[in-house]
Length: 150
Image (cartoon, rainbow, N blue to C red; front, side, top):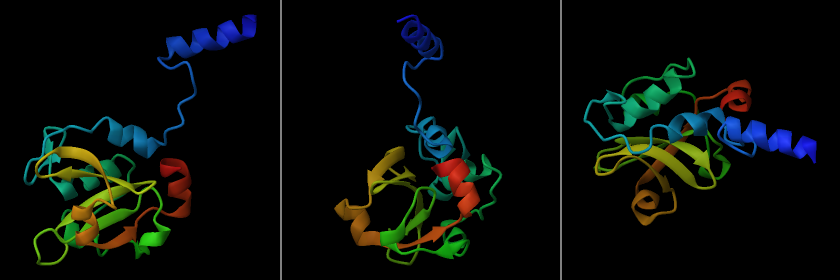
């Protein structure tokens, strides 16, 4: 019983009575949810989509190009059925090729800087995104994935 009390006390002191199962990636992006969209934005004062992905990856010392089109040329192509957390997902939102990017988190969910809603999570299966999905790229090495996204 004393051990249980100690465990609960330590959990309460740390702000969580249970172990935190979130990955470093999830912890990082959860702090950014709700930040406003800002065209050309690359900071917590406001992000555009590729500024957001670059900001998150920079936090882990992983270099990404600045634009979504350029980011879509980095890493290696990955099939939609093989997505894993940390993969970049790309969309054609304007009818002229890749124009939007987000970070896949798993379970069909990705996080991105949306023009109308700022940094937000959505499902790839939502009709708007499902119709506009183009491709995905794997940026993280297996080692980086184990450390950051798993």
